[in-house]
Image 1 (tube, rainbow, N blue to C red):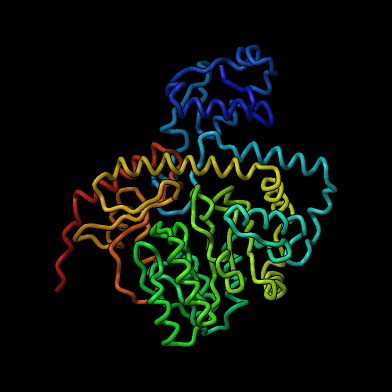
Image 2 (image 1 turned 30 degrees about the vertical axis):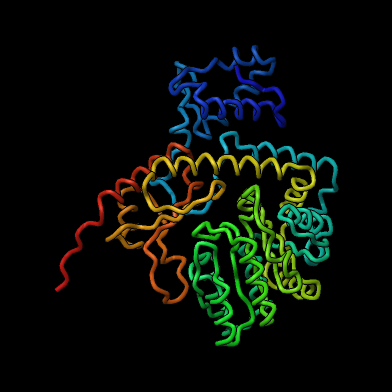
Length: 454
């Protein structure tokens, strides 16, 4: 008997959400037989069609399976959704999926409300330069969640953080210019820099992030316009730069007239966090955040808060690339932010991240792992004789995808022997545990003997 009290959205979706929670908690045992469509409809006071639709959706999500002549049976949390081709993905930085999938019902409800109360033709027209006013206002509200006050007119709405990063680099730099960053950095930055013919120089980092002395030395040694940083939940190491270190970095940037590109797409995941660099140096910093890691990857909505004098130039870069964000997806993100749905979805993602980080700590006990309770990934340092690429290749042979340190290394810096393990791309907690078990076995086994070279 599913508990439907207090659930929003269509009744069939409420039934599916309750079913998912009961499967995840173990209240419904794997292999258990569910009521017939008619019996459950009578118990809940809904139509048989509503139950049929709910069972069909549950089957599509892998929660149940139907057997002709026998009924509908629980598949169980462990095999709710199988990973493609039997491969467990610990490589893609995907937000972990809460068992109840709250974004599904939120999307259905929001789209229905937008269509009911709005002139739908406005979602089919070109938006204003830099984003429609209501979307820029929502963006200002979203960055304020991180402790950064912003006027809507200082916010530009982009088609995802990768697009925002492209707009920023094309606006701030010319082909051939040098961009400073951490010695290990977001792989997507390397792709954009290559596309735009921007040179990268990686600077030394430690457990607190970029070293200010290394930044100062680089500014003295060569002409440079900007630095790109991930100060909160650094990708891939999960480091969080403490506020004193942030103030030192800002001081160096001010002394050398250096623009700061602050990538904060994971910044809202920790419940407590230092102030963004943009709050300490608003005149120098271009703050980038998005909805992809916190709400839903498919929204493709990001916000750039920029120094006021640069907003028009950024809007020009926006028009020159994608012209504008699709108005409907921007409106969905704005509605979620205004109405509190975004905060609820963020809490659900954060809680699932904590559960999965606990699985990592259990399965990789004793390994040299850096992680944070709300992060979507961990940084695993490898024991001798492993190297990152060799470990990743062997893991792939055993059915697990991981990302070696080489993917994040800038230039020809000394190689770090480590891999990033993402907790969210595995479709279920059980699949995550299996994948981590394979990683643990591989760590214990050690690297296979390489063939002789003659």
